[in-house]
Image (cartoon, helix red, strand yellow):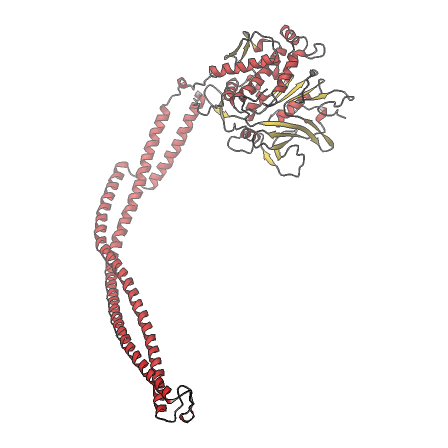
Length: 631
């Protein structure tokens, strides 16, 4: 079948079912994508394989105690998730039931690898259970379904899906509707599940109306809780000296009046302090500014002092040079400042004339330095004046700050005293208000108790549990009809959905009113129609269907436990439905995995997408059955 106009949602592809035991070789049954047929003699384990798969997908019914199982203690179910991010997993469970171990990887039979433990019971809040794990893969987790006419809701579990994908030999030929699980004991829930499957909508928004007993219990529970709250409030009021509401209100009014008066006094007392704080802020800013200016003047004065020291040093050097040059010029017994020789030993290169020129140059340089020193002293005098002025300003500013602090310290105790009184009154007001709130809360609770006590349960407001939309019914019937046509089922083409029975009428006859073989075929067609409908609508589906003995009508009356064929079964057995059934199952390879368990031999079909396993039922065959014969 072409994938055109089909949307494949995430689901599962079963890979293998494996039985293991401590002292026995493991026994596996493998599955392929597309259509799988497990066929052969009766009592070879075909139905046991289905029960084991159902058990490994959360079924609570333990496997039958047959001899072939006595040496095995665990079952392993490997599968792959379908979709963009497909992964392989292996589930392990004891034959006795209980929790699951979840390993990553397909056909992972090693106990050494890390695993996650999953509970067998569904829990909508936690994710550590198999049902939530599987539903999350399908994007169908955290759904709600109504279980009765009152709209009481329960969580949608994977087990609600399982009976629509896994059909055992008893169910497939039952007279119950194909949507019913648990022997039809939860018909309303089964109908709501079917509706959710075909629409993708759950019952989260359905409003629940309680039964009379539940309503009474709910009322009594609410009244009991209210009484407990009232008792706690009464004990608290007595402990805190509560008299009555009127007295308390008068105390509240008086306290609020006192607070207003104290607040006015506090604000007036705070005004001069605020003014002083503002003045203090100004002088502090001015202090920092003048202090920086003074530091700058001190730095410049220090630099000029060092420059003056340099001038003095240069003057001393030049004056010494000028003095020696003068003495040499008058031929005094002094060394030449140029060559270091005494006058009588001076060479032609260092004459008295050179000495005189040097002395005159030093004299001129001394004069220049003296002029610079005069300007320097003037600058230093100006800096000293600035420094003295700034020191005076800083001192005056510090005095203003001192005076401001003194005044603030003088006024602060009075302000703090007023603040203390105001805080005390505010604290008293808070306590009284809290007391009043407790009193009002008590009144509201008593009023609510009266309201609850007077309330009566109204069955008039039962939730309206919507049936399947007529258009959805019509489209599903078309899918069912298409399946019958593909299988060559003999009918006139009249398919109607019976809302009372939640089942199909074929040519005016309710599906369940046919013989068991016809019921088996049409039940199988119903489940395949659900798959195709979901794929057309892009709705979630597990992605596999397991059908046990759908072709019951082709049984041998002499060998089968189900005996002779009814007239409608006999008519069906003469058609090519068996052949066309498998052709159609093979054509669905891109939509889902199909696993068929049958007693009859398969028709000859030339297809690479048809995987079949034979259980011979005797030792001479390639495989006796699902498990070896017990020794």
